[in-house]
Image (cartoon, rainbow, N blue to C red; front, side, top):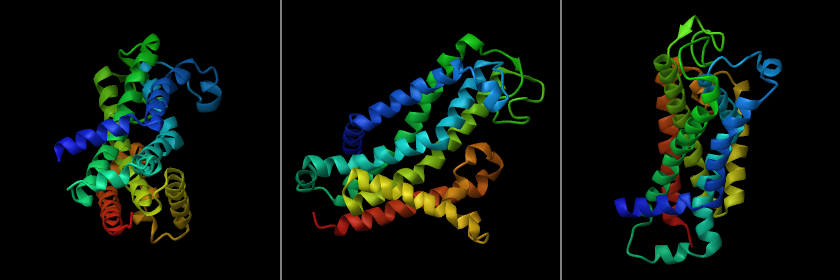
Length: 256
């Protein structure tokens, strides 16, 4: 199983969408570090390179990172169909569930790699602004970007690491959902669009207050609300495993 997982991981990171996504995640922070309109848009004058890291995360989680994760998970199966390699792989003496599980594990690792690349790019982009102690905040802790006094590099790193780990957890059910649609539709574009459409429809359900605490979309900003991590992480895990279970059921019975 380990060899299969490593093979699927290798195939995932060879996908064009994954390569472009990682490049975008690395370069995005440099735009924030050089942006002349931060004061007008965010009311922020950069006081530290640590703030570049948080700006990159906040901007990426608005749309870019979820979209990149959905595209990668969709293409991981859709590319096999498009290239005609899926049938050949399934002829091997290997359970379909094991094949899909390897793809799922690779897709679930990708969000953390994506965020790690963004973190690294942000640190490099923020170097000219310094990474030492500063008066202000990361935007992800008490006081927002204004902060609550002097912030040490250790405190800033801890806040940003926590936020990135929570953001990675937020992206896990999106990858699982996209793979579920991949097993149903067997198309990269169709499964990615279906996953995005599902998230948009779920956002509309906030009009039903009784459902709101249990909706996946309620916790897409969990990296901004670590106090909600108790319930939020539990529900994100349930959604991830639920979508994965449905994907396995569909794929096991799919006529290929």
